[in-house]
Image (cartoon, rainbow, N blue to C red; front, side, top):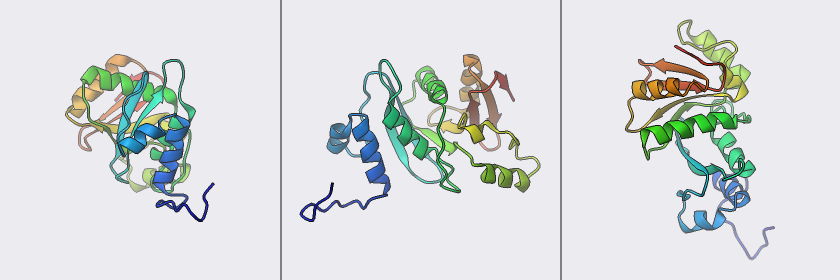
Length: 191
């Protein structure tokens, strides 16, 4: 609780306050206070993201040795929200596991560059109407928080798509002209 004697430089509702509370829930507030913007890897699985549309970044241990970290997953849900509407949706933790496996296979230390995470029904409808050749599915798994479109620094998108296909963990789309890879936790398929 804030008192008049203590003035928080970050007003309630800001991204920093949200991430600080999420990191605190994960037991990492001390690390975040020592190195703002950099959370060291904890035992388990850690991912880094850079959202290409919002400029937001996040490095977070989303899974401990035994289970997913609820507060950390909330921070991921927020980062991967529909950036057009601000709608937040639960992201399938299995999607994060796929990204983690890809990161391990590539050996890249770069963050995943997020093109699209969750998409609200309104955004999906608008994108479908915008172009008949856009490749936006009517029942896109983005609507369920089960899909993400990414790039990974230092890794050609074609190579990233090949590695994702090799995992056989869900759908993989390679979009050469837009330079990104779609991965999802749906049935195994590729395009």
